[in-house]
Length: 521
Image 1 (cartoon, rainbow, N blue to C red):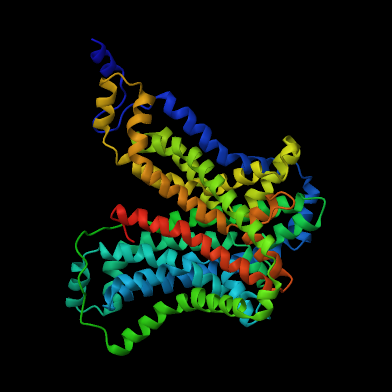
Image 2 (image 1 turned 30 degrees about the vertical axis):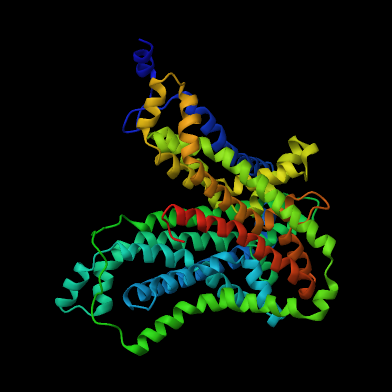
């Protein structure tokens, strides 16, 4: 009798899809709304600005120039990454490169280097490097993997029959690719291009080091130099507006994937040796520009005698401890906040779960400098005791990076069979008890992967850290930034080297975790 009634109460079915219970919705909704807090308050703050001052900020300050610089840089980087990334992905897939897995790993390497570290490495060689073109070249190099990797993955799952038929009907190779293959890989390529655009709009460290004045530079300058921070709020909203335009634009042109399943096979004869060498050189260019040259610059600085003499060991250790400490705290906080959203999205479909999950991912489009600025306004107005505290700093990281934890946690929860939950319920467990004792332990490895992703992102984060860190707290990223800003490249080298080393530890753990799950190592 007890078993029967318990079975009647359960909301979990074998298929895993059922009516959404309130005890799942409420914590997930609270977690998703946390992401909106900084944005809502920033909009309220901007709404309080007198109209005359708003017009003055928009048209009489340098806001227009910052906006045009940001648009020019983001659009040019996105277009270059789209053209170059698709060409490299097609070259790796169709050019029949030797050791294709090695080429894929090489193409992903620029993602491991923070953009400001790449600019630091180049400034070691050319201290006068500055302006639009260096910013364009370096941002393209460090962001192009966002296009290469999804496009290459899409190409692997696309059958080449349509393209082969097009070529037998007299189409030239590029025409056959354009009419048969491009419509199938376009959504993946444009989704990667959107990430490049958002990254370029929100980047601060790289453009600031290269002295190219974009909106993020303007936000930081207005925040640091003026007691009246209304100008910073307006500029921050312009950053968000550009990000939203990018998201809407990508959705408009992406279209639906016209997928023709099949195993990717060579289309046409093997490319000529000269063309293959050109494609290989093109694929190596981002690795050389975004990884090899910066790391060589860092290595040269580390080996110089004056660098060793200028190292402040105590300050270096303190910055390392702060970096590790806040990264662990952010990983735990982001995972705790993301888990209710992931658990809801994994087991239930419908308007409410989809809306809550979308809100959770919204933080992915928020620049760090915008989140930092909005939390400053919020704490000064409502909670002045928490201004520039570790709590607010970790909260800022949670808002920025919890979307990285949602995806992996959701996939792990989906991987747990609903049948196991039903068995636990029939044995008398409550819904939460069954979830805690069955789902959580089985999904824990995947949840841990999400936490590692948050740790890596937190270690490298710069603009929000500069704004939100308590007085006297310095991470490796802020120390590197401070010393580079005053052209102390030698003193910055140890901080840059340690940042690379400690960020590699969770990256290696992440690689091991994915290998155990059968994913790519």
